[in-house]
Length: 73
Image 1 (cartoon, helix red, strand yellow):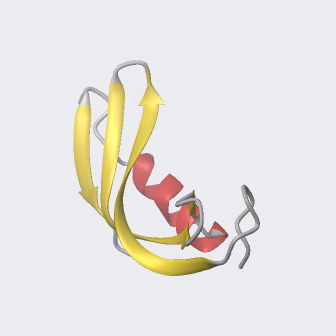
Image 2: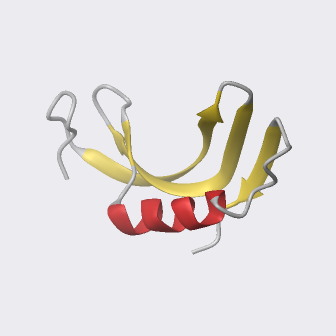
């Protein structure tokens, strides 16, 4: 797949990624499968992975300012 930012080639990697839900809430996903551009370093998340991330975000503690979640497909 080509990078949407620079057009470079992407490669599949496993990474930790933060998701800022609002002003005071951040969720960090550990071991998230993403595509990373070899030229500019931009990260892309495939649709199927993002659907699972959204499902998991619905289950996080709404009162926690920071939560770390291990990604599970």
